[in-house]
Length: 606
Image 1 (cartoon, rainbow, N blue to C red):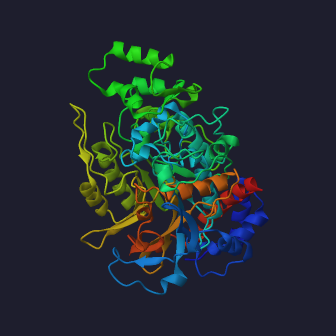
Image 2 (tube, rainbow, N blue to C red):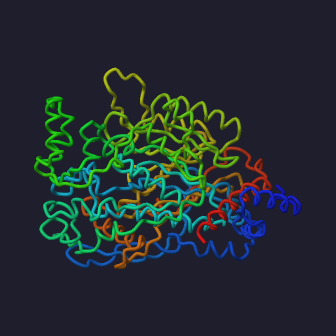
Image 3 (cartoon, rainbow, N blue to C red):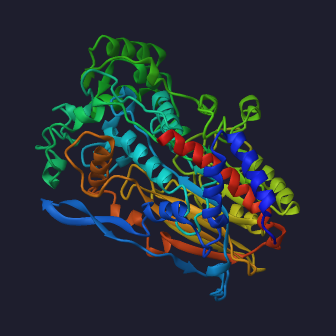
């Protein structure tokens, strides 16, 4: 499989550099030094040095340290974790020669469950946590005001890891598998898109922080100015008088993702709290000037629309009392139309309001999605890797999901085409095989909803399916799915940015040139140091968020890291067709375009 000749290489570099407005000399040097994504190649210099400098959990990860007060622990830097080969799908020993022979077909960033939060929004209804922090835990976290800072820190890590730590290959794309905007707020949706696009966001929506964590009445919340008198103080959470002011003091900068990114729906983009439908009272509450701080107030008003006994007259009386500040359990905050709650169509449409780089416009969604209302898509991430983004969210009730028949039939047809065209396939969804069993339907609804067993069985019919990437459960987990005829694929679930360990993943698809493929998963800690400083810069605040998240006593945070077999792994499987059909020259041309995009990204960083 010959690579590009010298003459072809010079011509390709010149053309690609001109198309991307980058230096041909820099592009040629980067491509020559990157060994074309072949691990074991003699890499030069700048590229090799950049790979070595890039932080990843191969070199270091972040663990809980000693107790500081009560039960509260700080975090420390821990040792790195090497790749662990998994042979569950391959079913036999792997050839040791693959290490020197492998070549990279796709290097991908995987983000999920980012949960960007506008912590001051009246529509956030944090009191649903109730009083003991054991129920409705997803409604409130001590680190809520710091979520934009964490996303910016994670984006920086992915930018730093734009060259594979394994092969030096350039990043091809990134995928977001749902739950990006936490509470259906247009502001949260806009913040998440802008942070991934490389724009700063301004969390200062009022002169001072206006929310439950600043209010003495909300003793059930973590109030960093004075946590005494409640469960968080009893646990030992620290007194941090400046934290809330720091969280809104300055815009949060972002370096942006270095490669095109794509997205799918999560249950938090479908239902309130990923569980309930949106009623008119909640829509009014979200943009209004009153925010609740008690469970009683939230239940009686914000959720009043769900009670069958609530009449239009009573709803009007409730709304008037709220507007006049006459309802107990509420405090006045600045009204803000920018906090309007979005619907499914608006979620897709907002992804067309984006920067031209890294792209693509729509981030997986197309004009067909906008006109048809279909919320699933396909895209070729490279000439040989096809992606399918699904919407597995239940539109009626409940956080878990299923695959509607319309998507199931569509995907089967598309997989038949991909197999005929010798395309390797990655499937993206929010829900995983553990949570794909929610068949709730409205009266009269007839479309069949497929669960995990049926869905996995269908995927196993197609050898070209090599991976299924998802999220939802906020933990690192990797499952092997093996068919009866030697076929199989890997299911890779990544953790979240709101709960500890606040990790995401890089995934690399590698041809071992021996009839096997490997999916390498590299867990990514966000760029902030393990120990938070006292400053108000975004990395210091992101570090504080991770420490607070690690002390969530109700959610067993250490479990979310997964086992060693769920983190840095090499996931082997048989190649579904002869991969020599992908020539080294064609692969080199692919990497050339990807490196040009990275140079564009780097120009923006300087």
